[in-house]
Structure formats: structure tokens, C-alpha cells
Image (cartoon, rainbow, N blue to C red; front, top):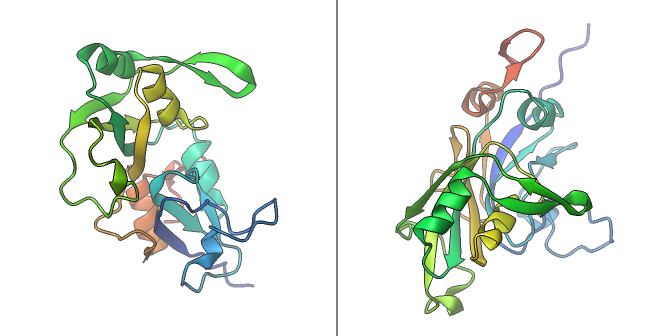
Length: 212
């Protein structure tokens, strides 16, 4: 009997300007995950991708179950972002974001986002180096947004629909898996038990934490 496959599980603090791919479909070799100074195992891939201009927590694993259990599950999983937007956010705009706002999604359809947790917060004191430091004099606000869905560029579209341009977007956590001081470009490895427990992953067939 063959031994079960031993998968590996990582978190990367993805820097701004890097795409969430190891291979570009366009043949572009600049800004790919493979440029990181890390020896990745065969079969590694990113889950819950961040766009090129976004930063923060990105899941990397050889375990193909994670996508199904995390993003295709009937059980919603929380994702939290720190978002810097132009100008001061009014109470009216904040209410729109909290209670549901219309955005345009794939196919040009109008979609109303479900209620979510949005708070105006102070600029994070322990924030990593700002890639847009040149914009320091621009009036801005910081929001902490927690969603349980992730349509394409949803957070950016939400703040734009509320009348605010997104200046910086950082995913800081998925469920109880946090950046916890991980520097941009740095990678942290977890055991299977830690990964599944922190992400609150449950196997729908066994009703138990998957892999445990």
C-alpha cells in the first residue's frame, strides 16, 4: 500500500506588483511567484488569488482540496482587507458599503453585494513599507472590510461605487489565518493540521475538519 501524499501548506505576503501565478499565460516572466527566493515543492499553486496591484495574504499549497473546501463550500469563509481610499469616507458611503452596494460583475451584470462588516480605522501603525509613498500628501481614509465572498476585484469595485478610489488594498487574514508580521515577499510554512484548523476547513463528507 502506497503512503498517502504529504502535501505542503504556505502563506505568502504578496508584494504589490506581483501576480498570483507561477506561469504567465502570456509568456511574461516578470512579477511571477517563481521569482521569489524560495524552493517551492512540485505542484505548488496559489489559492484565492490577489490581483497584481493588491497585497497581502496569499495561500500557496500542493493540496488541490483547499480551493474546493475554502471557496466552493456552502460554509462561507471570512476574508479581511485593509483598504486605503481617497478622501474622507462619509457616513452615507459607509452605510452603503455595510448594507449592500451595486457593482458591475462578469458579463456586465449589476450585482448588489450582501451586507458586510466595514469600519473606518486609523492608519495602521505597523503597516509595511508603502509602495505608494509618493501619495502620502493625498487626503485619504483607511477601511477594514470583512467579506465572505470574493468576486473579481470586488473590494475595489465596492469602494469605487461608494465614490472613493482605492489607493491600496491589503488582505490581512482569511478566517483565523493572519499575516502576523510576515514581511512582503516572505513565506511561512504551516502543518496540515494548523492550516485546516486556522482556515476552519470542514470536509462536507465527514463533517469533520478535513485531513485531521
